[in-house]
Length: 155
Image (cartoon, rainbow, N blue to C red; front, side):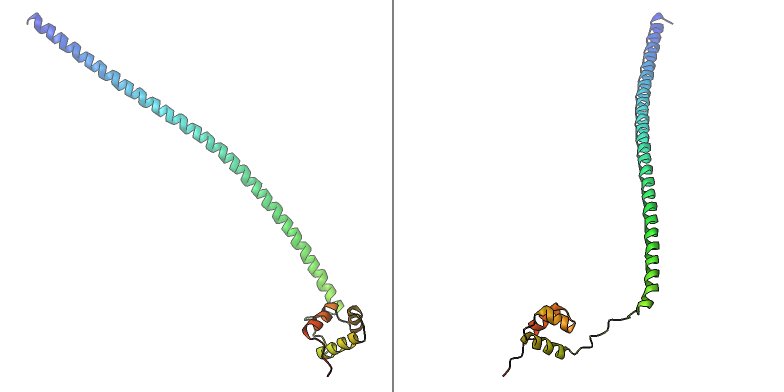
């Protein structure tokens, strides 16, 4: 075998080794870039996880505060309910003694007689307050009668 053959084979092997070396370097650089991306993703995930933990702590604190507030409100409502029940019991015990009225009683006076009495007293010169005291009705009722039923004119 001629030396040219060995030189050619050596050059071919050198080129093959250079090609393999380039391929290994590129493969390694891709792995390094991929590794850097993974590390970057891991750092981002860890920072997000830390923020989530902080938010979780804040939410837990808010939830505890709301529970405490709810408990205080329920306690106050229970106290108010207890006082209301006590007041109801006292009122219920007092009402029978006072002669409890189940429904308002109608006015026993005849409205026509009352109206004629009001106008008769007005003609005598009494004021609304005096008429109200004399008949036992309110001044507003007298004023209403005067507006709704004007005095009957004498013929």
